[in-house]
Length: 218
Image (cartoon, rainbow, N blue to C red):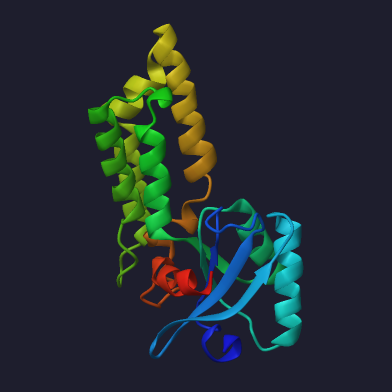
């Protein structure tokens, strides 16, 4: 199954404390001609890059022709690192749904200092960056992404939060800068669609399609 369908795109879905046993359970899924299918699953003691990589190496030995060009996953540094070490040529992309969920949760958290309007404005600008179109003939897609990124940098919410000298807001500004630059804009190639045109042609941008299937297996 991995060799037949996994060499286009492979998806990984993990159970994050969603079952009664306190052990990380992972599903390796593929999209077949009739829908999503769980091609493999594994349980590890701890959710580390080393443990995930060890499991992937076993699957790779069992399926020597499996060499996915693209992997879709949640924002998990352990999963990303494990796949990139197991398959050095792979492009790892973040699931659109979980990217949006992670951003919405962060900007909505009162401890991060954004009011409702600022949160909505920032999310809208981040979506422009994420959905900047892929390349078309004669058009560089990264130019569209750069324009969206520059628009965010020139926006009221970005300037106000990063330049405020009021004590409480200054703390929030440092949190916002850290979050934007160390969590998202250091790896745009993993979540911005403008960077997907060269290696990615499957119409799959989220691993949510696997979750109903995995629920039955759990």
